[in-house]
Length: 442
Image (cartoon, rainbow, N blue to C red; front, side, top):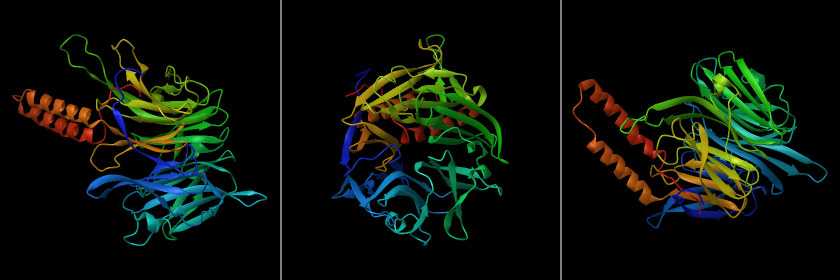
């Protein structure tokens, strides 16, 4: 236990018929989760109103063309980019045919008007693709099209040291494999099998693409999406397989120089979190400017066996994001960046940790109940835990923020007053997505 008490309570736990893996959990729509188990079962988790109460419900979804003897490898889902409509679900699995194992990718999408987001209907509309490689991570990202529009695509890594691209053919109402170099030139000629991939769009029509490989290699590229054209690329070699790479922006408030001074906002560029099987987790700072030359280690992140999953979110509503690491050693670790002037300048400090009863495989932060306050979904080897923020602390924070606004000076010049109103509107919407917690572990 570190710091104060852990400001989450466990609302529910759903035990699965068989174990999952690090690729086995995804968000489907706004308020649903899909969890895949190795024995071919897919469970949909949601909250719904039963007997005038909001209760958790875990229900198996019967996706077609998944044999009973299949082992699911990975699952992913996304909503189509506007103006298109519909939920798309992708599932990779391996079918054991006795003499050999055959891998497949199933893509589910319903084009019938009114059924585009109906999961039961989508599960019956399948495109079945036989693969020539063993699949790993199934990932989606949005790309910029030649006509200026946006389209969401699947990227699938495999044991053939390649990334495979799947795009929708609108005229044929199906997805087709396309050459990856067509849209992602940075993902060709890879040094090893890619275990984890992350892509983010940044200002100026550019994107950052990061990948972590089975041989310990980490790759990063800055790409101009018009073309597309690789502007810069970097690589670094670790001593063990890479379990996660995660790109994220980091902004934090600097400490006040003197008592009574307001803290300034220190804006930083994108950072890259890298976790591996046996080494400490590392954050590379300001990667679009510095590449992989500014590493910062997360202390003690290697003390609880391998880190298998990671998430970057603002858990305590202070505007500064925390780093969550889930380990095979059954611990959830929370790190926070210490800004300049805080005594631990520009370092990440372990804030709290929480123990579970089995290894952690995946974590997602989303609003399952629809109340504007997000829940933390933690997939472990035995099932799915749903953690909710402590309502008493959240209510105290809301009252504190309201009191601050009421006591704030109201006599200002007209331009300042207008600017303040805009900032207040942004602040009011922030707590809907994030929450207050300064905690310790159970």
